[in-house]
Image 1 (tube, rainbow, N blue to C red):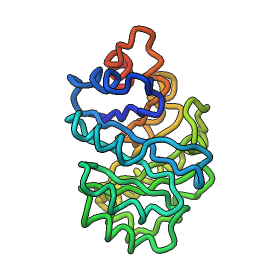
Image 2 (image 1 turned 45 degrees about the vertical axis):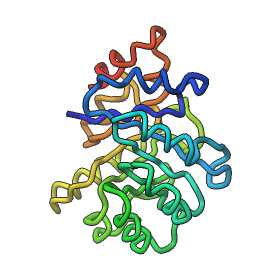
Image 3 (image 1 turned 60 degrees about the vertical axis):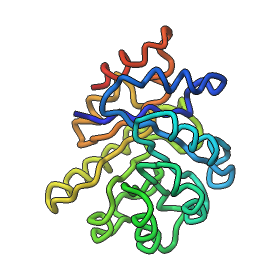
Image 4 (image 1 turned 180 degrees about the horizontal axis):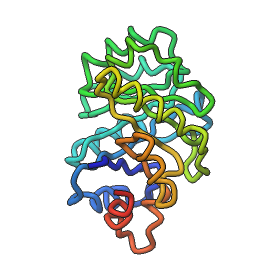
Length: 216
């Protein structure tokens, strides 16, 4: 089954607990949390305090996407709050293997994210064998509600090809413009984990399960 990761960036922040509770009975679901620093991307979002409360309140896996300049600086403060996955941006790091090694000591899952303009083959094969997830951004990171960049799907196909050829085990996650119109092509290319924000949270009756099932 495809994992759906609703992006809380699109939730109603004034009733965040209620929004999270609407997912309580849905299986195989991650809560996607975009942590932004106002530097790597021009926006600020969740911090340690909010994610800590989410970890205490929800039984779903917390999937944190760090759109930050210095992801290594976030390990110490976030390692004790129950994150399942810690994804950092390839573009923000110099010593990738060193960071992956440190993250592996503290989090069950470690992922690498790529901006739309970053070629997928920048990740060497020896790192593909070590990581648990690759996040392909199909919009430019920083804000929700953007249009899907179709050209990024070739990256998903490449990752699926490498995964099959080399018996890699990483999840292929796609974030940006995921909806009922784009999902079939995304999954056909090999994606196993879909981040969906605007599409899920725009359901007029707040029946988020119906939107999630439509993606599946």
